[in-house]
Amino acid sequence: MTELAHRQQPTGPIVWVLATGEDHEGGTVLGVYTTKEAAKGPFVAAAQQIPFDLDNAWQDEESGAVHAHGGCDWVSLEPHPLISAQQLT
Figure 1 (cartoon, rainbow, N blue to C red):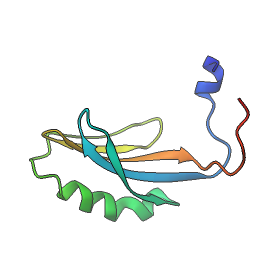
Figure 2: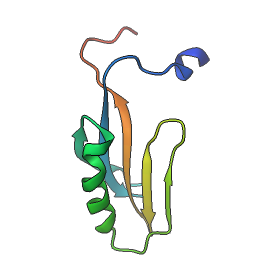
Figure 3: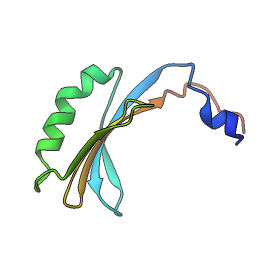
């Protein structure tokens, strides 16, 4: 993939994927939301389930993704393009 392709913003619909997991062990999708606003409550609830004190929380300025991390556990809410047709490779 070219550098230009990496920098281009998706032009189609975006969904917000809420996931949780442990460092270096993958994760589990908790939900897929049509807007970031709709996922705020579930994100906060998932972050409160981290059994350790939060040691880091941040928002990616470019994408708007938000993350929380405590101990080895994490929660993320990230935008992803909605794929509705076969992709050309």
